[in-house]
Each structure stands twice: as structure tokens, then as C-alpha cells.
Image (cartoon, rainbow over the protein chains, first blue to last red):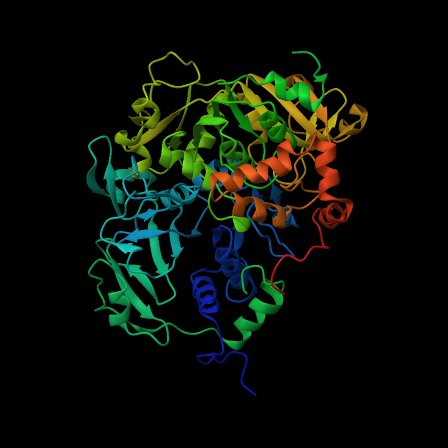
Length: 270
Length: 325
């Protein structure tokens, strides 16, 4: 019988399980975490059950430090407020918590990302004549502006990892100074409001981080992939010289918690 | 001010004029006044200016019906039950809807300014993004920032230097003061004091920011009851102009303490909304094909509604299958 702390072998877990576990490992104990719907919920709840028991979760619709006994299916869900310290609203979440500086970590998503961590969730093509409209920004850029660390969970595809995204919805490490539109570092633009920025990008193929210049590099590859395969699934020239090795797979304990405690009903984990 | 007037759903919808600027209570697929939205469509409202913190199922129904001319917001979709806002997307791509994109925090800031009676609210949110690209100021491009419409500010935002602490650049977001707040609330006292259960979203801000307020209440309760715990209340009755009492008025969106989101209903609407023809057929069945809210509820049926009904302790349904297991 395998020990619960052993790592599962290929074929014993699904790609989405690894995403949830890799994201959960980004949570440090005590973090105030701002999470969106879906995988971020799995990540924070798993982290609370394992390595970060005193971390707390804020959902942007207004629940502060809830302790749901049933997995919410959206951040506005009635389930989010169960045993919360506060049931409040967006003014508290965005201004009282985020703008004031309580938020340590946030999990975010995106349709496209560039090498500086700028993310597009708005349109495909020229904004004035778009060929496709996504949901729009939501709170993604606000959270990415003022949380100390952000982690993006995304699908790895060449068309999604781009030299330049069609529309910068959410601010990475180098962005645009208005009204001129010249490129500027986030630190210079945000001045004394600067607190940090994108720390990691987790995809179905690997975990990426950002170097001293704010440029994305490959940190670990998921089991079954090579760094070259990951680079081939990026449109920009991905730095694979700093790869530390393979991403640690889920442990049997993490898998058990995900399927029996976090999402037993199969809402996000099919 | 004074006490709010109790009216019918049809009377409430008739108050809203073509071209009015409106905003809603709720959040994505929660606590939206859907019965009122359907009635507005039966009454053929057009050219509406919808300003909202985020869109949801109600936005898509209004956009699908061709009722929206301007949409100022930051997000639209049906959460887990429909990942995009197909009707808003079609309107933006075809040019029938002027879309002014902000971020969540920006829209909250605009509502906060409006709700506090201030002309603008500062924030340091989403700076450096294309949301602030001057070329993408769509209301200016449409010639609508010329002062002729008092509800449209002269600029999308302003960049200023912090004059007090040397914090650097920050944004000023102009106030939003819609003509109407269209609100679904859990309970309203018979003199108008409003209470919502669980998250408050931006409901209080929308109510205070708007010139006139219609509240669709799940229940009207004795004012003496709602005043026993005033700390649980959202706004006083004198902030409300009209009340309609209408159980299940938020369906298919959810209402904490009363009923859950009707996921299958929204999935079907989302699938239909992928084409205009599909949406039209859906609207023919669920909006025009019923006389009003009562017939709509009868069509959904008691069995379905009972599955959605919230557990009285937990505030959400424990009897529906939510996932794959």
C-alpha cells in the first residue's frame, strides 16, 4: 500500500488534478487569497486542508474568509458565505481589502498572455473591429494591479502564449503608460502603489515564472513533457535555460482530498 | 422622498423610458430582477443605456432582445452555465451596441462616487492596460461625450498626480448616476426598508446612485419585523420609489435563502443565445409566449421550483444535482 504522502504515478491523476495541486502549492500559510470561480477555488481549499491552514479566502462578490461546506459554483454563490467572517459586497472586496493592501495572493485566468504577463480576457483582434468577444476584464486587472503576488492558471497553446496580446486587459510586469502608450515597467507606473505582480503561470504543460526583468521563463515541466515541447507551444521565444526539473505530481493524499473533501460533487473536477 | 408606492410589475416596467440609463442589483447570476427584465422586453423597451458592475443572464436577455444601445461594464457571462455573453458580443462585433469596457474596480469606483454624491472617485486600479487606451474610448468615438447627455461624463477617466502624499499617478473615475436602479431584494418592509440576505454585492451603491429606484421584493414583511434588527438592513425606505412584491422574481438567477440558480434553464438560454434566431425562438417561448410572471412560473412547474428551493438553514438548495457525481 502506497504511503499517502507518495507522489501519484502518471495515469493515476488527470491533468486538471495537477493544475489544482500546483496552484495550491503557491499558497503560503497565512496568505489572504483572492480567488475566482473554478480551479482557484479548488486550489485555495486544498491549500487550507494541507500546507496553508491559516490562509483565508476572499471572493470578490463580498464574502470574506468563508468556510464553505459545499463547493460554491460561482464567487457570488450563497455557499461562499457559510461561516464567513463577513458577508459584504464589492466595495469592501475591491477597496476595503484589495486597495487597502490586505491581499497577498490571487489566482487569475486568461485567454492570452504575453512574455511580460500581460493578459487578454476581452477581445480577439483589433478592439475596434473584434472578431470575438470574451467575458471582459471582471476583477482580473484590479487584483493583478494591487495583490502582492498573482498566479495565472491557463491552457497552454501557441495562439495563447503570444509576443503581444491583442488587448492588454490585465497588467503584467511591463505595460502601457497613457496617454502616450509607451512601454513602462509596472514598478515605475504604479509608483508607491506598487506591491508586486504576476509570480507564476501554471498551464497543462508546465509552471512558468518571471525573471528580474519581468520576462517569463519556464520553471518546471509537468511529467510527460519536455522543455522543448513547451517552448514549441509558445509564440514568443520562451527561455528554457532555467528549468529546475519536473513539476511534482499530486500526492495520493492531495488527490483524495480533492475528490472527497473539496469537490466530491464533481462540479469542477469531472 | 416619502414612502414608496406599491405597484404592479407591468406598471413598473412602464415607468422606464426608451433611452434611459439603468443599473441592476445582484452579481452575475445572483439576485437579478428577471421578471422585470422580461416585462421590459414584452413592453418593447429600446435604446437603453445599461451601466453595471458586471453583466449576467439579465444583460444577455436584454441584449438578445435588442433593448440595449450602450453597455458600460466590465464582464458578461453566465458563470459556469454559459462562459460568454453571446448577445453582447454579437452587438459589439456588429456595432449595434456601444461597449465601454472598464474594470470591476473602475465600475465600483464610478458607482461609489455616484452613491456618495461626489463627481469622481480616485483609484489606482488597472493602470497601464488597454482599458485606458484613449483610442478605445467608444462613447467619445460615438460623439456622445459632448455634454448633450447629462448621464455621460466628458471623459472616460482622468489621470492625476497625487497632490498629498506623492503616491504618483492615479485615476479619477467619473460618477455614475443612472436614471433607474432596478433591484431585486430578499425582503422589504411595508414602509420600504430593504434587506438582502448574504452578500450585498453593490446593491446599496446602485440604489443610492440612481435617481429613481424600483425594488422587486421576494417578500414584503411588516416594517416592525425588519426594524427589530436594523443592522441587517441595506437602505431606508425613503430611498425607494416603487415596490413590487413578486415571489421567484429572480428566476433563473439565484436568491440566497429562497432559491438556487436554475443551472439547466440558463444553460438552455446560453445555447439558444449563440445565434439571433436561436435567441428569438427562446424569447418567443419564455418571454412573449407567456402572459406574465405567473404563467412563466407555471410553465417551469412546481417540481422544478421545489428542487431549486433553498434549504432554510443553509440558504441554498441541497436537492439538486450540481456536478458530474
